[in-house]
Image 1 (tube, rainbow, N blue to C red):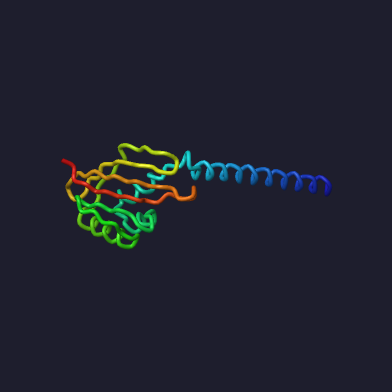
Image 2: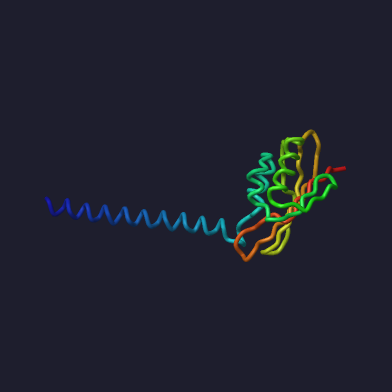
Length: 148
């Protein structure tokens, strides 16, 4: 009887280790697939922050220096300056919706074009991102233009 109980515990430990290993492999491959430069869509989180009007979180994607254009007013700005420009824009034009209409590019440089509805107006948004040393993408250029 004691021997059977000991065998059952060993079998249960093997079963738990097997399940834990399978779960770890599943989550590891899922994370790898999401962060792989070929499969990862950098514009998903960027679009979410534009849609939410979240300049603070969007600025985490900014390069150290970038070009920000708001209605033909172009600024070469530091990350902090760009965050303030975008925050002011979102304060004036509260986003209601944002959709990415087109993306293109190469593995280290990507481009997206989208439509933003904000402040009762329709606008086009252009986003250029580049990947530095294959590590992470950063917004190099961000343009908000009124649609005609």
